[in-house]
Length: 114
Length: 113
Image: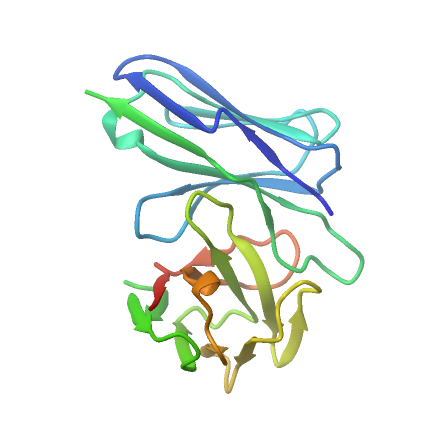
C-alpha cells in the first residue's frame, strides 16, 4: 500500500507570512498532484508535477517534486486569507494497466489570519 | 458552468435503509471515480469505471455498489448504510486513466441516523 504523509497537519499563520507544507512517501510516484479543498466542496487541482526535481509556480505558490519522485513540497509566499483551505497531495502510481485513481495524503489544514 | 454535478449535496438516511447518490458530468470523460472522505481524513477511492468496465478497490465493502448506465451518469448505491458510512462522497472524472487531471464534484454529505 502506498502512503503519502503530509506535514504539518494543521498550520495557522498571519497574513503576509511565508509557509511550506510537505508531502512524503517511501514509494515512487509517476506523478504527484496538489489539490485545495474548501469546506463542503470537492478538491480542486492546483498543479501536477511529473519530472523528478521539477519546480512549478502558480502565482505565489511554488511546487517542487523531489529528485527521487517520492516527495513534494508546496511553498506559499506572502500568504493571504484566501489561501485558507485543506491542501491535499495525491500520487498516481502508474501501475501496469493504467492508473486506477489517486492515493491521497490526509492533507494540511491551513488557516491564514488577517 | 458546473462540469461534475452531484445530487443531492446533503443526504440523510436511516441505518440500514438503502440510499443512492448521483453523479453526472458534462465533460464526456471516459473515467468516473467514487471516493469516500471521512472527517479529517484523506479521500479514499472506492471504485471507478473506465467506460463500462467496473474496477473495484480490494478493500471496498460489498455494501457499496455502483452503476454507470451511460457516459454521463454514475451512481453510488449503499445497500445497508451503517453509522460508519457517514462521510462526504466525492465523484471525480478524468479523460483517461493515467496522467490526466481529475475533476471533482462538490460532494454529497451523507448522514446516517
